[in-house]
Image 1 (cartoon, rainbow, N blue to C red):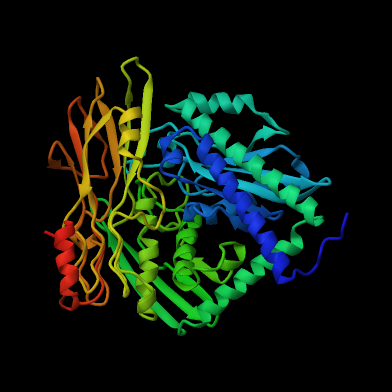
Image 2: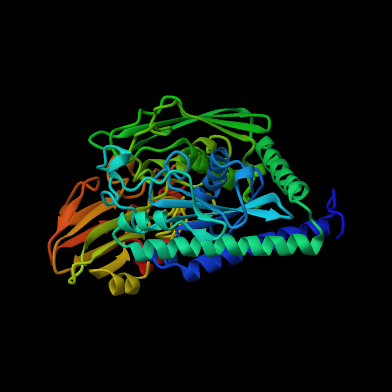
Length: 538
């Protein structure tokens, strides 16, 4: 066998990188095709990551959810704390949904498979996916502590040397409303891990790589150098921003001081409100994930995401604040807080590089969660996403109903109606909801669901920016987008609470519009006429 190269010429490095990236994308495609739930198969709420033997990310699937791509490697390192390398064997699969070791809420199940070559641990294949159910209360901001939110799974070996732990499988099935979907998605994750392992070992055999150490260092170092170079272009200084979310009875304040010095950035959230006894708290790994995502997207979007790209970024948040929650804080709807972080980062960066950021977005991501019974008495539960309008920029209008900062998709109406007790009466754009400006913010949308079940159905929501003060802000003189609303039988309701739909009842979700960019008086008259013709404005 050839000796592993210590240096990689550009051609060889590109070949190796392309093969690694394609293997992870292939694994993601396999996970998608073999999954059972619409939340994975249609909404793509999952990610696949390949990491080195220390759990440092090396390459990720192209379409992975941004938060997962940062949290999965951290979870791998937690796995190594619980199961050192000498306790692992080929065919093992480690698993957890621990809030503070994982993604921040229990429905996300993170798995990792150690990869061995010639008896040595050389890498990890990892995945996180949003399960359609995890027991407990259906996903809601009303939860007061994590114990209400479902089954907590500590780090464990779900698979030992290729054999599924039957006790674990039976416990998981017993604690979920749709066990076939939950287990089907989990097996799809296992399939993706095995595929990544096979492709990586074949690559290492082909190129004579005894381990990944030198290659991982080269790839991560190049990403780090590119990110540091991009940071250096931003003027040194401290850029401050804050935002009010809808919160609960009172808005919640998030405060940021972005310190840029040389080729490093520190995001300091000191001054942010304390954690609350409701399910909207955020763990620190999720806070880091969406902070790092926003910084890289704005400063260095072309360079591959891996551990190196995030080394110049430090995130600080006081322990016990809503962005660094402590047990047993509830976090089921942590996106209702955490999704404000990328726009908060961009708001701070706008003071230094306004031409490279966007106005406020009509997110956090909206969704409807439900649980009920079928006519035969069996349980059913599911989760549907819907998006608000995107923020405008210095170059263009904001796209309509585009998911951000998470990149999950809305399930097709046909799939919703085929597998769930709902009839979708309409799904349409909300004319006039994008903020006015030289460039218009993207419009929101309206979904009207009718309960077609034989009995009552419990529904909860992820919905934010429903108050005027929390509407997606404009930038550089642009106007804010319109706030959203949730209505049951035509009457506005508190979206942070659970509601019961009787047969025939309806629920309507009106997602917010994105903010505009630049003074409205500077908008091209031809663009205004086109907006009217296309129905984007009244």
